[in-house]
Amino acid sequence: MTIGKSPDRENAPSSAEPSDAVHPADAPSIGRVLSAARIEAGLTVDQVSTATRVRVPIVHAIEEDEFGRCGGDFYARGHIRAIARAVGVDGEALVARYDAAHGGSPASRRPTQLIDSGPIKVPGRSRPNWTVAMVAAIVAVVALIGFNLVSGKGGHTTTGSASAPLPSGSGTGSVAPEPSPSVQPPAPASSAAAIAAVPADKVTVKLVAEGGTSWVSATDGNGKSLFQNNIGNGQDQTFTDPKQIKLVLGNGGAVHAYVNGKDLGLLGKDGQVVHVTYTPGDPQAG
Image 1 (cartoon, one colour):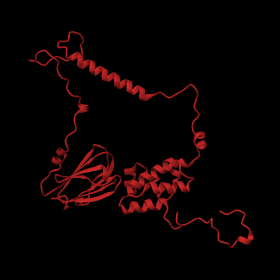
Image 2 (cartoon, rainbow, N blue to C red):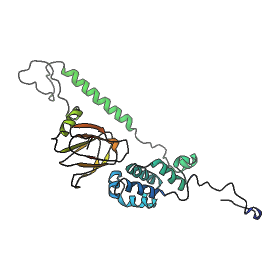
Image 3 (tube, one colour):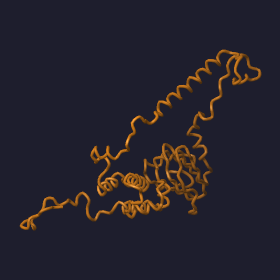
Image 4 (spheres, helix red, strand yellow):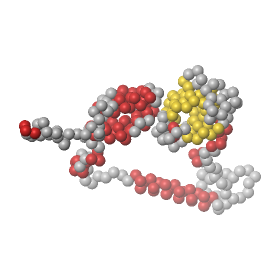
């Protein structure tokens, strides 16, 4: 904007005019970019809401460039990133455009603004140090376990009612404690492949979430929906059909696939939307 332009320079070219190279006037808005990417990925608003945990009305509002329902700039940025990741577009670029249109990112504020906007601290009151308390509790548990192990090597125990009796037929000496169910070693990956093995006239797909969460949609050979939900780290789902299994994944980098007894590894990269169909026989040919 030019202030105080003199009449004799009204028709002169101005060097302060903004460049259309940064944000072209006809460039699609943030909402239109997300809506077009969702449609291209074959996802509905309900599916995006399930994958991102952003409520359906807010997804609709963002696609219409109405960010007031997000509850503030912080939540708006988070919703934009989550939806962009689900539909396969660059969320950081869209957040940068949002910041440019709404007063800049928090990092561009002056230090005094950030300090003044914080809560007032009351002298003499401090938050408890939970880290120290947690470390102390862990040390106490380790010490107790060590004491029990050392005392168990002494043979017969004459005091205390908590010691377990020796098995019948055993001699003197300590009995090794049974491992806790919570620390059982995980099943080898080969067992998952064995579970996925099926006859040649069927297709069986086993999906295992590894290192993250992904939204999964699975349909059979007749177009019937078999599953539409998130699977988190360590969870798995198995699908079988005589014709085919069609999958849509919201985060291919978090899903490990075993198809017809064959380990196919991860189905994509982090945040990548994946569409794939498998049929009986060799999964590479399906």
